Length: 106
Length: 154
Length: 257
Image: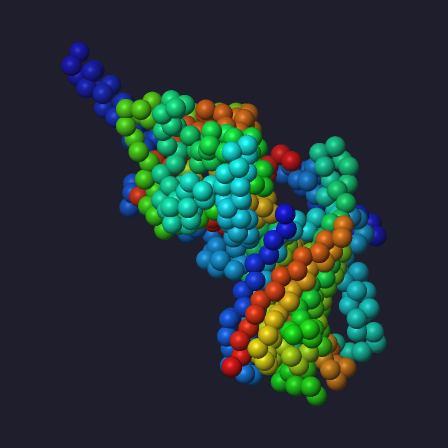
């Protein structure tokens, strides 16, 4: 049961730089750990995070095992127009989580 | 090579003494400043990496290496003509040197990202900004990583 | 004879004073011993990974389940208001069971009795999510455990466990957490051990966990046999620890190193 938390201001002035905070539930298993019996635990991480703004990509992150569990990513974007921000996390084992938020730019 | 092997043995012995050996296996021979330089080389090629313009925020002392808050910001007008294309983060002593690459552009408004990273040991973290004019700028920070006193059996 | 009795009496008093509880004016949450960065992680609901569990718990709260096809919300309404203060008053006495129960046990009792659903396993994702959701509603409330004729013996048993030397190191909880809080143990500061923030996101676990997980973790660290999840010793210890933290502000879901 994957879930995510997005923090985007609901409205912004045209041209204003808004800060977006994202948190997604994922163990980010590094692939370097072993069980008590010595068996390796395979890597299982989120590899890519993309944010689009009315369909246009405005931010992308390539993640590696060094990103902490339950990845927290903060970035900025210019409020250009009203519309929808879409967020997509994808990774190992077919992991795919999508969230969206609307922003009003009067 | 000999010096590196004995230091590895020392770390693993120390780790075993703390009861860590069952929980962590550090892949040998990857956790070196040399492999970090190689990873940086893959990004910058033959170009020169300038010091400056990049601000790397990390706590000098981290309570737990599992989640260390990291912030990177770069001085840049972030216009179509002059902006940060990407910020790359590397470590020197983690099992592999790459941490993340953040792809920006003029839509970002400002070059500023934050996240939380894992640090396997006390070490240096490097951030490299790739600018639209083809130049590279970097900053580095040292973090002391402490370990939990009482570990849980897996 | 009277002088001997007086001397013994004075010695007894002195013994209880040495193993005594931290005066209320000196009581400090584990939050106060954390670094600035970890405190910031707890303070920001958009950065605290425990809030993911709270979100999930809210969804579970509203989901119909069990043979009775009932959601928690069907009886309890909006948990964010109706559950205010509840977690800060647990463990609390369960008349039907004749003993105190933790918030996790209370949730499972409701599942079994009212929803006719199987109980959720300790430390399961669902139980942690529901516990986080219920606990978060008590954030800001004072810890307030009821001690009366029904709970006194369980409180005394919890206190006895807290002061009893255990394990290979022959250490008691009290020795670190009453006598040496604020000092360092292998690079970490020893907190006073007030469970004001559970369930919490522990950086060492890279996950949310319950108070009982932390207590078992401590016992393993002390090289003592950890009691099973739900064991009476752990419930009594929880009861004592929450009573020992009475009046402090409940801060779940917290973040700890």
